[in-house]
Image (tube, rainbow, N blue to C red; front, side):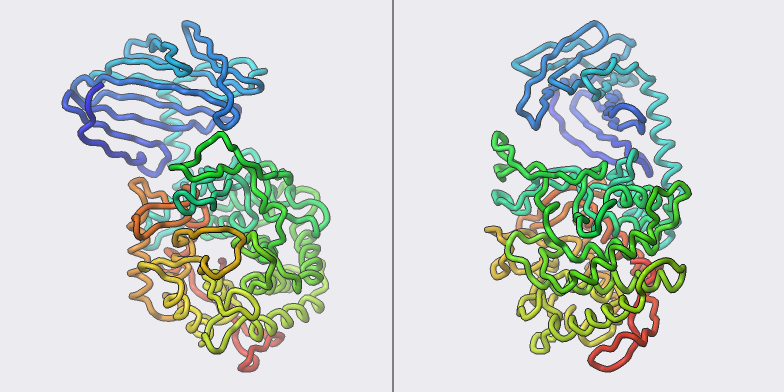
Length: 562
């Protein structure tokens, strides 16, 4: 094989077709990787295109099932290679420059091939997954599929209505979020990976390949703001299917199909990313009580358009049942937005989001009608608001705190102004922003909370949390520190990788990403911050006579979308 002296990669325009260029002393090739938006089977296509000279290449295929534990039975015919284990089958097909097959040989439980690509030649590989009980999928025209895939993404991006600053980063983030949507159901995963560590060598490793109500609600509001109504309706149908049943049974996390059983277990035969064990499959957060999800879901339902083929329970009925249940349980402690594995607490952010849930439901009923005990809801809304101001704000720190009676800061409090609980210029909001700047920022980035003093039930520390850093951008902008907001946003954009993707966390000392990747919540916060800085998202004030703060009746900031 030839030594690579230079490499680079990029997406082809506004698509998810990845082009990776390799330069050697003997020539140059481009790898074109894409997944056709097919209905029945999952395929990964790779085209190796000769650009200059002649480059010797080697293809290695090491197929494993059941998280690497099961070595499949591999058979090869003149036309294809098949790997089968239990219910799973993978089919590998290839075409060389003359239209023939690329020869593969078995080598110590792997399959390999060596070939040379000259300028103007193309060698293609198609890897298809299907059930071992199904007939082998038919071949398709790779060139035509590439054209169709590019057209699919170009057509999708053409629907984007965003016209503000940072358009490239916003569009790439929107594409990434779309790619994290499971088309058959409308479910949206938090990330496509499991157990990428929040600290190398640590145990804060989680499986994010599921649908969090919180993340998906945030994502849908971003999609709506960018003009993607179809995605909003698909999510609405997924939500109604997933949470069907008694409101008390609502979960924070579901599977792509709306599955409720997501038992967390450890694949102890895997060493973990750079030795970061354990590798977790499933997520125990599905069993937690997280009060804040009621607020995110209520806000999303209030904004989501009615789907023509809506299923049995309308969103208005669902919302009313959820709010009635919330009115019964909002005074209980919970595990909170960060899904702590320590004791339940009265988290300030959770209570604020309970207020949001009731507030948005009241607005929706008053604007559109529908069932609901609005008078009771108004009483509960006022009670939550008063309690948060009394117990969630520390006058000595001049900041909202992590939980009632605590002296600890928490970056989730940066969302208080974003959801309209108080106006951005309220002294308590400004004080909270200042306190978090001083107490939770490391090397210019925001940590969720101080892991040394907060009992979250886990040992060790983590990196700075990138979504919180984008929330700080929005807060700085809203309180009038526009230059600081723009500078922090510019800093955050430098953390994107070479193809515009970003992870959950970042280690400023090691200068590397941490956590699952790409992370939906981070990309959502990136887009939200761009909306704010470009003027496409601004606070909307509305007087509410039912709510009083410590200064008496006042204007509460009801934000337009997020």
